Amino acid sequence: MSRCRSLPASWMRATAMMLALTASAGAMADNPTDGPNDLFGVGIQRMPAWIGSKDHRNQAVPYIQAELPWHITLSTLDGLTVDLIHGDKWRGGLYGNYMWGRDREELGPKLGGVIDSLGPRINAGGYLEYQATAQLSFGTTLSHDTQGEGAYLDVYADYDLPVIGYLNHSLQVQWQAMNGPAMRRFFGVTPEQAAKLDITAWSPGAGSQQMAFEYDAYMPTSLHTGFAIAINYTRLLGQAAESPLVRVYGSRNQLTTTLAFVYRL
Image (cartoon, rainbow, N blue to C red; front, side, top):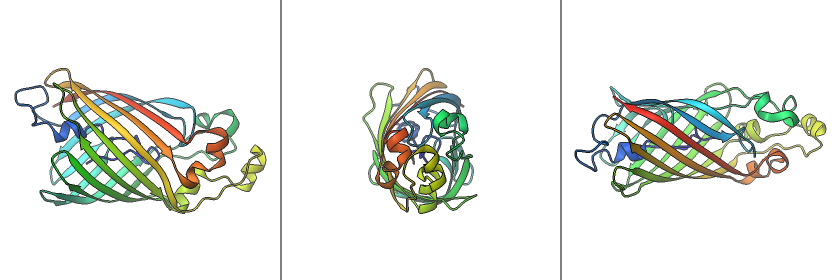
């Protein structure tokens, strides 16, 4: 299972970096991709300074991918899942994830102090995933802020590309929608803010927010170490793309890249 760590909505928004490893660990016998799949490490992520920004920031991130008892998975990329459905084709259950915010420095000199800073949040809900083939899966998550009124719907598809040597890699496409409070939290502009910035006030409602495409790869360097790479391109849609914050100060095209060094127990 994998989801774009909703940059806007997750640690990436993006990302499904471990899909290739977890889905194809048995594809090559007697090679460095065989063995345990509990991973711990650190990574650097270059992401938009804020959702919709044309500027970027570098963020150090811890890297965890662990299978725990009772069908619990903990991941800094995919969040926390608790499987209540765990059949051959269908999986589903509880879901939780972490959302990046934005501070005054990240907003920059023009927007900082005018546009609201946003603290990080945790959202929680559920997920359902269908394994169509050994390589292709489809899924959806529905989650809600634990401290706030924002709600998020994600629909995604993952496809494992053929293994090249020891390189495991995959593609993901994801569509995300937000309810009105979430859309206004990230893209809204109050009349007072608009007057200070000389732009149009903006109060978006619920709707489509983004479409994301991601390439993920894992290359082992030994039985217990390796590098994980993710390249995520996101296109903001609808009222998110039409926000004056995006049109005047940002870009509807968002690029996030991640590089992590991983140790496998």
